[in-house]
Image 1 (cartoon, rainbow, N blue to C red):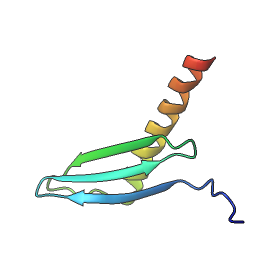
Image 2 (cartoon, rainbow, N blue to C red):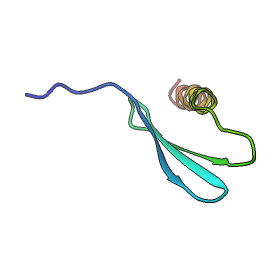
Image 3 (tube, helix red, strand yellow):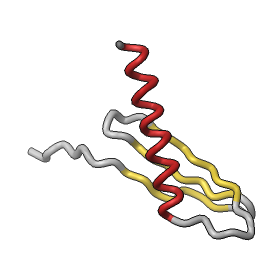
Image 4 (cartoon, helix red, strand yellow):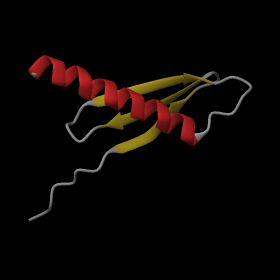
Length: 68
């Protein structure tokens, strides 16, 4: 029997000329899509992870309000 993974998954899904789209799945199977405008500045992985962390915390907060 395979063990159930509780790890989250985040990856670059798609890029266009001016947009990079990232996808993230939380342990609760909530899917978060992040679309970042690409400018002359470089989008660092650390910046994407910071945004993902903030959105994940916001999603957990909103779910706790609904069921709390």
